[in-house]
Length: 233
Image (cartoon, rainbow, N blue to C red; front, side, top):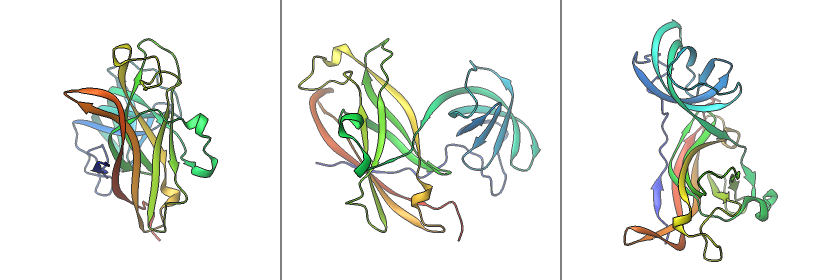
């Protein structure tokens, strides 16, 4: 049985670029990095002038971050104190006809929440992994070309854990793994008609719970919502 969730179509940041009424206190946002400048999804530019956390993110990365706004330097542009950040995986979606099943995998993955901001469909996801392992997992958003229509995009989130998922035919049990959370962003705005909107559904498979714990059985879950174009006609 499918579980229907609603896509949270909201920007993480409390700043609103149209009115430029950015609150001068702690904000949470997501954006693309170029050197020490963060270009948030809502059009606001944040220049990092003070760091109160571990640094180390690279230019051209995408991050989720929290900050204190120190001062306004121009319209939609602020100097900030960076309080914390997490790396965000940025990946292009795949067309179902080009998705190799052996590469995208069919291991369980959970979407904890999802929202659209800027050009992206963002997700906070959860997977199993072996603690201390450096094995890279693959996460892909696959557009089902056969079931998508003129007004609805049908995606499936796929996960390849390369042996670090608990499966009925595998050697691992839930005592052998930990649950890890991460962020991923998929640019999808080129699928949305300019000035319009599209309905969106995303399917994913995750473990069935019973008596307060997970079982080896999985089920398909579905979230649904819509995404508006950020571009005018």
